Image (cartoon, rainbow, N blue to C red):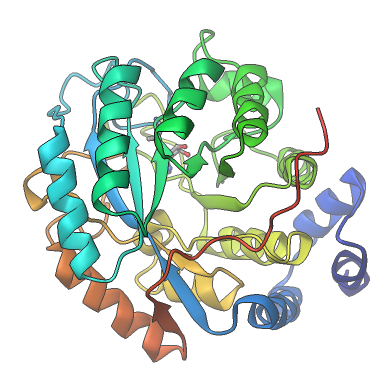
Length: 352
Ligand code: SAM
């Protein structure tokens, strides 16, 4: 199987059969070989810098009912909250002082945040923090809405495709949500000019190596600036409460593969990875990741943004999270960078 890793490094692509054979046939030795290659590429482009993004989880209301997600509409035991513009700006001020130069506004698909309200929030952040990148992660909206938010000053957008395969997608979502629409949103975002991030859960229910192969082919075609992947972790108040979580091992392997396929992409070691293993984020960095996303949300609401069970860092102050991650990164020979941390993957939109 080493020859497939060599081929991937040399050509940047594999066929669907090769992807699934490599994912199915992975071994600890092969993983070590992959991680060494992935680290070398990561060092070539990004050195030992780890970019930080300040995550502001500003609403946990959601109109959707994804079967895996703890803030799905049908979870009546979730305690719902929203942050207003002032509270969001306060998080940014705190974050700026801690060295954050990217703010990620993430939330459920909450109808309260109309285009007018979001434009006002984005413009205010842009005005107060002109040297910072503004990333939105607020789900599927119309192209016009994405355009308005871009014109207001948003630079980046995160929207995981979740799984490329339409049948698999339908096993994870109600009929009202489709893989095709989600993917169309991503093409729209790219065309508008956002630095676009996509991604998927590893080990989501019913996922096969062929599904992951299709995810890799989709990533290759979309050529996003960022790819967020993390293990699926069950939430006790969802239809998938009894399903098994994705593994650290497979998530790390996929991180390494993504680094080899898209050498300049921004690749976070996610909170979900840190949740399934105490040193998950460090291992993610050592597998080729180069971004971490500490939480800047106010402590009072942290415990309510629960997408899955046992989420880490729900009680810590932003400053503690920042320090803790700095220590963790330093312990494996990496440094947190105080910069916007833009992606070097700047290729224009080519397909679709
Ligand atoms: N509403 C926005 C959207 O749809 O992109 C952003 C919020 S959504 C909760 C963010 C991401 O959380 C999803 O893209 C999904 O991959 C991840 N997620 C949700 N439930 C999860 C779970 N049980 N385990 C791991 N990740 C999960």
